[in-house]
Image 1: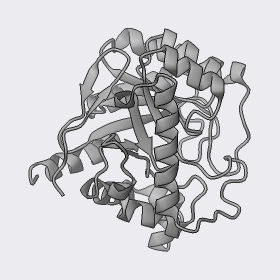
Image 2: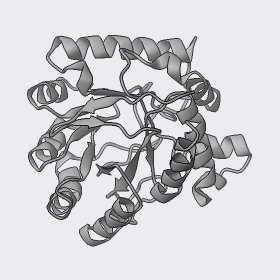
Image 3: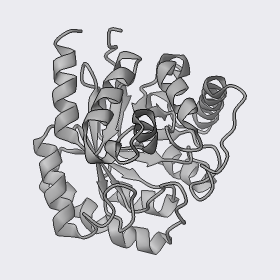
Image 4: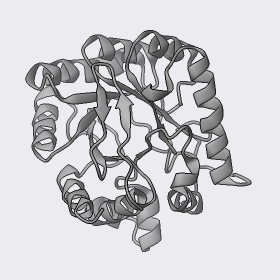
Length: 282
């Protein structure tokens, strides 16, 4: 499938998504994220990791201060702010042109991040909180709306759909319409099917296989497959997806073939190289 050269309206610019796909580097400043919790939970290690991702070609850095892995509990807003804000301010000072995203479901955290110069709000709840909708309507930021069945603490207990592709697409259609109606322009919206968020292995595979069927209004789509458990399940080895970048890279390339515009990953260099090779053929 040939890639479309889509654009996305962000807080400071209309961004032309790189031909062949963009890479969003994950910066978890948490003690308990499923893959890298505790690795970058203070400013200096977080900055060092961000520098390495920028050097490796990350188009955007996604900063998160709350783990939303299956079974996780919600973090208090003040604690989330304590984790993310020093890192955001330091990153914006050192990399004034680097695209930054805040991964949060809390409007108060998103507000402080936007005031500090973040370009995108990445909300796993799809802006379920009316305060988050109001904030994003008032600020010219990019917005990522993700589909999730349930909430992180219980979402993987018994996910069920009659038709996962149709239901996720319906969610996108309705949510985009609702957000546009309150003043969030469609060109500011990016869609994320929420792989692993209230989905079985079979649901995840179906969504990737039929990814282009999920697209609404020709909006860009983000895939977040990095090191997720379903990759290990498909390989018959639960630890393999975390131990090696290869499963994430291969599945991300397959998603790119099916229309993914951006990829949220831990291993930036490996995916950047893979997308570069793919770009030479499209």
